[in-house]
Image 1 (cartoon, rainbow, N blue to C red):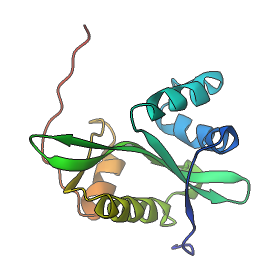
Image 2 (cartoon, rainbow, N blue to C red; image 1 turned 120 degrees about the horizontal axis):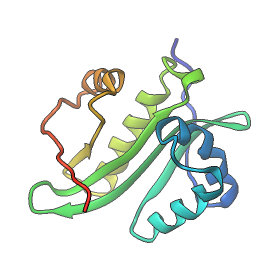
Image 3 (cartoon, rainbow, N blue to C red; image 1 turned 135 degrees about the vertical axis):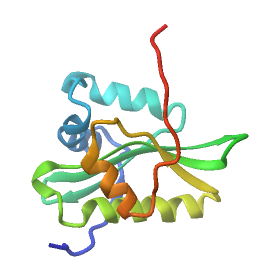
Length: 144
């Protein structure tokens, strides 16, 4: 069921960031509520932004992203985090957020949008592919 389009906000205040915390914890359950705002502010120092869709007194979808540049992709928007609250899925909020991010990337003169997604997140992969974002690589990582 498609909901009416909602305004997308950038979380700049502690109150707005706090509103985003419960939804973000669905994607990142290891983040403690007491640490959330400090972690967002630290990431903002390197260009991270937190966008959200609000319904009544709750955030229903959240996206953390940044603008970056590299040799491979040129100027790009990287989506660190993208999640719709479980109670609000299949209502078009994820699509609305992704479309907003695409528009923002275009306004910021980005050539591409990128994100990584855990191998276990099959529902998310289907969503991204449905939204025109095919799988293009594998991501490798190790602890140091």
